[in-house]
Length: 324
Ligand code: F6P
Image (cartoon, rainbow, N blue to C red; front, side):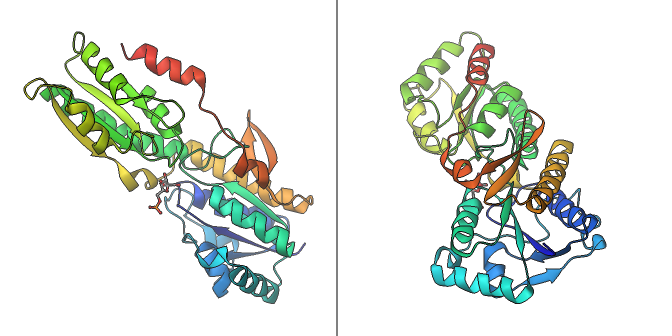
């Protein structure tokens, strides 16, 4: 293998740049020609492909977002789109791909590999931490720290006014961001898609907490089955008397995707990037380079996208126990 290409796809996450840098420099270190594909699968279809040098990735390690840009490509979902992408790669002589992204990215990579056979290794880049085959995904740690900073601030004002705040965090169908924020931010309650918490449960807990606390924070994962934080708050509020408590809602939103990556995310991105390139050179493909128990592990894309990554029971218990 002489020429490889790297791209970022799906929602950006802090640490993706560290991963891109690692892929480019590891590739060059191993005497490969490394190309970048801009805008993920859309750029692959358009042929937005550029040769990278070692200095092309200078001064990006510490930056959030992705210098390669990202997109959620509709065109790549079609066979016609994927054929165009293949032709573009062929015309550039690309023999291997490194895909940095989440489950949507890996679903595309798996189909593409099965159709056209270009060896592909993935790096887990998403704030959601919902990918099987790695303890953490690139960007998760930064997102949790960003959300925690906000929750600490909300705590100040919640306490000053004796209010109950519902704080919605990202994570799509996963409660990883929510549970870590709830533990780290000392939330009184957490609502995650993995466990059922009804409106009645929330009302009961908040009423019970009134004896010991004047303010409370409920962290709501955006994918919780009771709905978004605003909807949940309205339902809960209806069970309280008007003068009883003031309720407020904050949706943290895309702030969780931005910012300088933490040390953990820079290192995870760098490790995963190196492992992906070296995996390709060893003949690995159709798999992701993750880190489990501090060791590089290659997991088939099929497992990454179909297997569940359950929330830690211990974390759930810890949150409940410490919120009394
Ligand atoms: O997958 C990352 C993520 O930030 C999710 O947490 C969130 O549900 C989604 O992407 C938002 O996507 P978009 O930026 O396309 O609205």
